[in-house]
Amino acid sequence: MKIWGNIPKIMGVYGKQKNVNKSGRTQGVSQKKDVLSISNQAKDFQTVMKALKDVPDVRQDKVNDLAERYQSGNYDVSGRDIADKIAKSILNKKV
Image 1 (cartoon, rainbow, N blue to C red):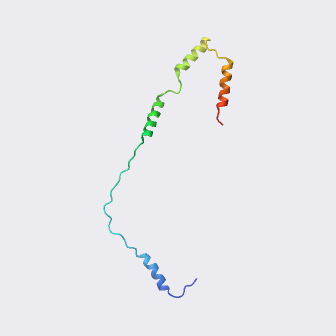
Image 2 (tube, one colour):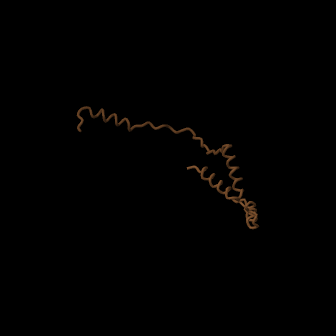
Image 3 (cartoon, rainbow, N blue to C red):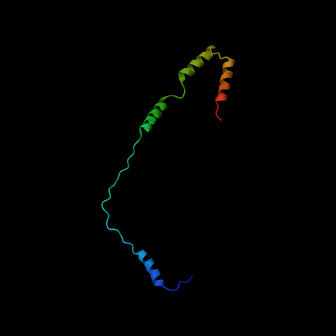
């Protein structure tokens, strides 16, 4: 495409864009430090998580009691109780 006519005026517009006024020296920039704050809810959660880590996964006293009762022959569970527990676990299962 050829442009005929006042080309110097067009070039003058583009020439003005090149001359950008530079700002003077900036005033002193204050340095800010990063700050981390933990909410009270997060602190409570952290305390609970620490307490839960100290709780054993297996309650050994219960296991020992059941093992002792089983070995001595005193551990007796009715079939109805087992069936009830199985039915409740199936009904309570979320799909």
